[in-house]
Image 1 (cartoon, rainbow, N blue to C red):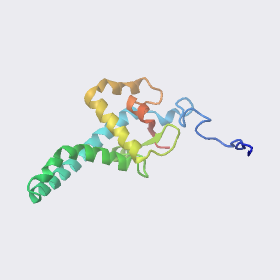
Image 2 (image 1 turned 45 degrees about the vertical axis):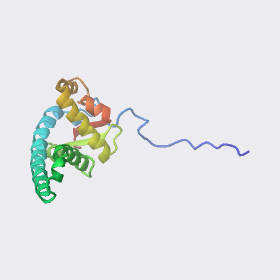
Image 3 (image 1 turned 180 degrees about the vertical axis):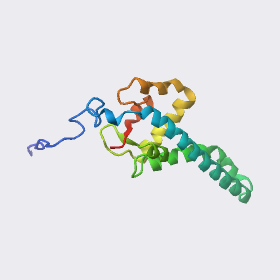
Image 4 (image 1 turned 90 degrees about the horizontal axis):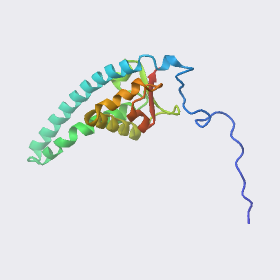
Length: 164
């Protein structure tokens, strides 16, 4: 039998060395005004998503004419596809923020400091829209969290903070 070898001890810091990559005590500037900025960013992003949804609906309507009404069955998928796709491509993209968040100087990262993947970004958006429609007061959690995270942020494992 071969003897089992253990890996050498890790040197350097990784996400297990600290509970979070951002600390509201040592880096309070990262979280100043985040709730207000997120609210304004939401308004900008909602307008962008609305415009994209209208454009996508027009495309589906035209496709419906070409397919004798068959493509009109896609109307129910337009808003969710546009909203989730928008968040997946922007938050999960190289800038780690939606257009509204970039305008407000915000960035979205994983709790350990890594970039958000498009799948996590879409999941985060799905949780947000669900919490907004089903139980809006759940968004108030951010007023009591030191990192200004809402419950959908915690469930998705993301942190929204001011760009460094």
